[in-house]
Each structure stands twice: as C-alpha cells, then as structure tokens.
Amino acid sequence: LSLHDALPIFGIAGHAMRGIALAAKRRGNIVTGLDEYASPGPGADWLTAWGLEWTTQPDPRLLDTVDLVIISGATPQDYAMLELARGKHIRIISFAEYLGDLTRGKHVIAVSGTHGKTTTTALITWLLDSAGRKPDFLIGIRPFNFDSSARLEDAETFVVEGDEYRASSMDALSKVQYYHPDVLVLTSAEHDHPDTFPDLGSVVTRFKEIVGQLPESGHLVAWAESKTVTDIAKTALCDVITYGLKSGDYTARNIGFVPTGIEFDAYERGDLLGRIATPLFGRHNVLNALAATAVSLSEGLSFQQIVAGGATFRGAFRRFNLISPANARVTVVDDYAHHPTEAAATIEAAKLHFPGRRVVVIYRPHTPSRTAALLPEYQRAFDRADLVY
Image (cartoon, rainbow, N blue to C red; front, side, top):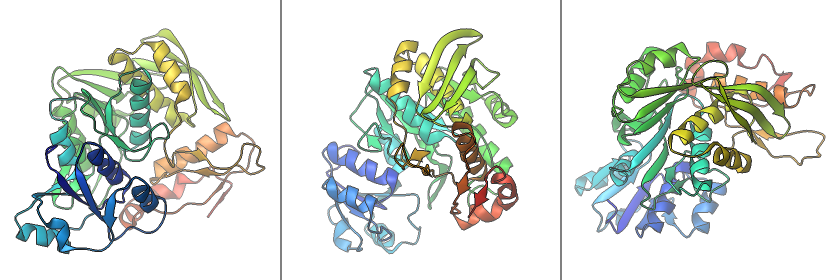
C-alpha cells in the first residue's frame, strides 16, 4: 500500500483521518480528500494549513486513475461515491485495514479498552519518543507534544489507539484487530457503542477475541481492579502484567492531586521505583500513567526516562484541557468525556484538583444510541457536580 501514488481518503476531516492523511502525504502519496460533512473550523483549517488537497463536494474525478479508497468509520455503506468506486472495481478499505497493512511485521503496541485509550496511547508514545525511540503512531486525537495524530515513517515500533469499535460501516471487525498487536493494554471494559454491541456481554466477547489473538511472545497489560478486565485477561496465551491503584504488579501510593496535575509514588511488585509527576488530572489518569509506565519499562526504558517524559507530557486535545488563564477567577476545563463513567471521572477530577471550588458542568450528549442505552448510568453520573446543564 505504501507504493500507491494517488490515495483518496473519504471522511478526511476527522481527527484520526486527517492525521493519517498527513502521514500518507509525508510518505510521498498524492492524497486527495473528500468530506461532505466537514464544517468550517479547526479541522478544515488544519487540513488546508498542511497543504492537503480536499473538498466537500463529491466529484467522480477523485476516482480517476486510483485502485484504492480509504474510508473513515463514519462513511455510510450506501454513500454514492462508494457505489461509484464499486462500479469501477476500486478496492475500498477502512483506515484500520490500511494501517494494518502498512505496519505488518512491526512491533505493535496497542491500547484498548472502553476508557483512557487516547491519553494512555499518547503518553506511551511520548515516553518512547522523548527517550529517543521515535515510534510511529496513530492516536484518536492530536497530542499536544506532536503536530499531528499520526506518524508513519517506517519505524520498527508502532503505537496505536486500539479501538474496539467497528472498522467501518462495511466491516464488523474491530479496528484494533487489524493492527495485530504484540503488546496490548486493556484499560477497562464497559458497555459502549450500543449501535455495534447490544450489551456488556458482547463487548466482553469481542475483547476476549482481541486478547486471545495476542502472540505467546507478547504480553497483556491489564487493570487489576476490574473483575471484567481480569476475566478477559484469563483468555490471554501470553504473559499478563497488571496495574492498579492498590493491587497489581504496578501500584501507586501517596497520590497528590494538585492544580498542575497528578503525582504519585510508583511501585513495582511492592518495591518503590520513585515518584512520577505529570500534568494529567484525576484518579483515572493515575491508572493511565501506571499502564504507560508498565509498558515503557517492558520496552526497556529506565524509570528515570519515564519520569522525565512524564514531566514534559502535555496531554491531548479535549482531555481535561485547562483553557482559562492560570489567574482566572473561574477555571474553565474542556473534556470529551462522552460516557457516564467518563463524565463522573472528569467531575471527580475537578473536585480533587480544585477542592472547595464550585463545579458547574455543561454536558453535551454524544450520539443518540449511546445516550439512550446508557440513560440509567447517566442518572448518577453528575452526582458530584454542584450545577449541571
């Protein structure tokens, strides 16, 4: 696939898709993009700023002299341009399949789970990068330490956000199943994506498939304090490394929640490694940092390199971003939290890091199917807020 000169990408304005588009252009591909649903704003401006050729208008000429089209997960199966591509016998693949082909034979580290994927993937990538490893990567949204959400430069190591959601409207396989990871992080397992998974049991079944496909020479890094996760981990044929706030191979003690982030003493099987401080917020991000620490140590980084990388990590877009000035009377935080568990965790983080402050929450529900399916969980998600819109 790396030899294709012309590469049309449908749904190019999405966060991950535009990262892939830029990475493909940097590889030497002639990238053309189409996204009818792109609205004016940062995404469109970013594509234009990087000199990517794209349009919001369907044009049959986009399919001239090409034999491959890459589509986003949101591209409808009956999209007219796809029908035209089928008529021309052009191969249509998801971006996950494209990445899987490009990274076949690489050392792949994937982060999967219902929550925490983006932050954990971004942190692992930065820890390796800041230590001089320079991995390739794909992250669901741009981390602030990098200029894009993807880098594909033929590095031996590929770090990827391993989403369990379907690869595309035409493909029921999960995105992560195309990446063939050697190392997999499983952060959590809850009911999500109800348009694909009708209940928690179907989510667990899929995660068991993903874990069961790990090679015996690889390893699974799993959250020790979730019975659902530990039950899934039992299906692994490889070594399992666990982490948790109080139990697991890697644990955290003396946790501090300060206005600039989290800090904690990291322990490996009961032995103190040292103290980590990073500008992430909330109890859930202590877990994410522990997972990243476990992976980085297994990849040969020293604890000192992890401490240095954690201190210079800048987080990712819409992950508890402090968007108001430091001296503002009102602290404004932007967070993607699109699941009841994540909404509750974000509110808890605000309470922990800014004790005594009034927490006002403005919440925009994300997808009708998720909101309807998880409505009972939403009834308790905002309990710790002082006021909710």
